[in-house]
Every structure is written in structure tokens, then in C-alpha cells.
Image (cartoon, helix red, strand yellow):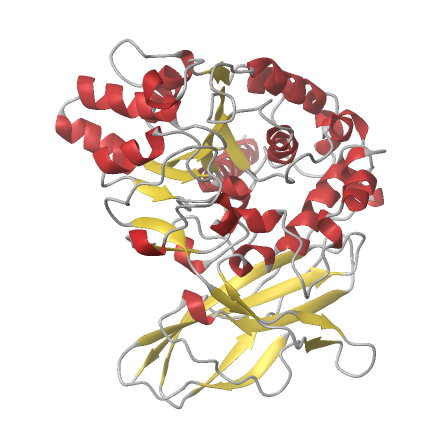
Length: 481
């Protein structure tokens, strides 16, 4: 009887630990509501396909059909449902590769719509909609996680939610709700965006205001001179996404104006070891942004906006920032990689520097729709043999160590350590000696500093599967005088 009691107790403890682990994993997922002007052009449908393939690591709380400057009087929730139904046909196969993919019926319950009205004509008294009420409902939930609002079209449905919160809640309660919000919008596609930023100055807001051509997000689909642009080519999309990958791939339409212009809103919410959603200035798959008030004279006020006026920004926002980026390329002989001779230094480099990685990741997940586990590739699991925050004194040596890194498919792994100066306060390059493609860098020397500084180092681990997949670890080195 005593042995049975011990067995029961152990079983209970195991179950408790298991559920605590599941809860911890759930907390790490980012809550997301998508606003999409789907059917304005094909790119929203393309982004929906990718979003659904990451629905096991992003907690989708709503997908709302909206208008935009490009589609002022229509909303199309039926297209969202069509994408979800295609996803439902491959969900069982996706679960063979990773846990947590929701079923199609639960996702269909999250589809709503905003008013078929343009911009500020859809904000104010009597302008509530299914979509605006849904945002408030999710925001009211007792959940400590931030709520991301990813805006692929016009933002007026979200603006109506904010309007109603301010009209119906005590100021303290309204402010507490707004503090939970994180907004990433693909430019201003109606006139409610600037209204939101003016009237809710404490709202966390990522946007590239002005002409689309100067925006960071356009780097997802822009062919860049000096690098290989194969993974955004129509041929690559046909072979790796659209054809031979089941109903969800078949749903992915041909590019008309630009591939997946809306996808950057959620790329930085994917847990890959690099992304840190609360620090847009640290850089990630969705680009890097800094918090400042743009000068109107330096904004692109003449570029294409679809007719949305470009007004002066009333306060600091998370917006365009530049990276100096020199790609590493394959070396035929000797050291496996070398630095290229081309140098980029602009805001678009903050996104396209990761483009091959997130495109290959997309292609691998598309393979999961139809392949058995053994027939597809899965990302490596980087590890570091020391804390991810270390403190050293000026002139002191330190080590970067990727011990314990593994790959679920048993693939051979390539390692690359590099400094990300723009992400830290110390902007100078710290010399790597010996090579930076070792799993363990045995000796780096901290520079002499006059005040405490931070230097960010990124470990990129790439397997040699098909397609090659990359994951990362970030090490922040605190350097003190």
C-alpha cells in the first residue's frame, strides 16, 4: 500500500511538472491579433499562409478583416476562412513535426471583421464592429502577456477599440489596458494611424511613416544588388511553397505587387533565439527599429502612400534604424566562410540580412505539411556553455561557447559568432581571434571603456539539411571600466 501511494504521488508530481512546463511554454508565446485588408492584393493571403504555419509558436487571438486606403468600402473575412480551411487539411501532418498547432475549427472562431468604412469615418460614436469589440474582449482577459496588434492594412478598427476604451473606462483602467498593447503596422494605410499616435502617446508603436519605398518592411520583397535574391524569386516560391506542398501551398497566390509585405509584423514574434519582442532596437527577423521622434524634414513625404497624408509625428515612435551589414559567404577552400566585399548601411539591411534564414524556415514548415518527420528538416537547438549575460572588465579576456548545441535530425552544424554593434551601446567592432566560425571562441579581449558599455554577440547555428535552417543565441557582454 505504501509503494502504491508513493507511485501515485510520483505520478501526480510528474503531471504537475508537465503542466507547469506547458504553462511556461504557453506564457512564452506572443499573443497576436491580425488586422488585414485581405483581397486588396494577394500579399495578405500569402502572409496568412505563413502565419498559420507558425500558429503553434504564436498565440493567435484574432484575425480581423478590415479596409485600407487601397480598399475603402469592403472587408473579406471569407478569404481568411478559406486559408484556415486549407490549413485544417494539413494540421494533422504538421503535428507530426511539432506540437501545438491549433485545429481549424478553433481558428475559425477567431475570425471577425471591421466596418466597411475608410479611416476615421469608421472611428467614433456608433462605429463599433465585431472586430473592435473583439480586440477589447481579448485585452480584457486576465492574461499577463502583452497583446500584439499586427496591422496589415488600415488601423481604424483598432482605433475604434481605443476610442471606446477611453470613452467607457476610468482613466487608470484605460491606461493599464493600453500599456499591454504592442502595435506593429505596415506603414499608414489609412488616416487613423496618425490619429492613434497623437491621442495615445504612451502606446508602443512600430511604424515606418511616409512613403512605402523608404520603409523597413519593404526589404522582405526587394531584390538587393550585391546579394543572392533567390529565396524571394517566383521560381523559388513555386518550388518551395506553392506546388507539391498540399492545400495550404496551393492557396498561396502568385505575387502581384510585392511578396508578403505584411509578414514583417510577426516575424520578430517567432521564438528563434534572436528575436526579443520587447526590444525592437536589438534587431530580429522583422527588422530593427529605434525609439525617436522623426524629423518631418527628413521623412519621405512625396513617396507612394496610396493617398494617405504624411503628417509630422507628434511623439517618439519605434521606427527606421540603420545596420552596417557585411554578409558572410561560402568559401570554396580553406575556412568555410569569408566576409563578402559588399557593405550595406541602411534600414532595409536590418531585415534582409536575415531573409534567407526566415525564407528557408518557411520552406521547411511548408514541407511539414506533407512529409513524414524523417523526410523533412527541423531547426537545430543552440546552447551556450555560460550565462547569456556576462560581465567583464576593460582589457579582460572572455569566452564565447556553444557547447551542448544539437540537431534533432543529426545534421552536421555550422557555427558563426558575430558582434551586433547597433544592438549594444558599444559601437566599435571587437576583434575575433581566431576564426569566428568555431563553436567555441576561446579568447576575446574586452575593449577599454570609460563608462559601462554593452556589446551584443550573436551565435548563429545552421544545419546542413534541406533547406538549411538557422537558430540563434544572443550573449550580452557588460563591459565595465
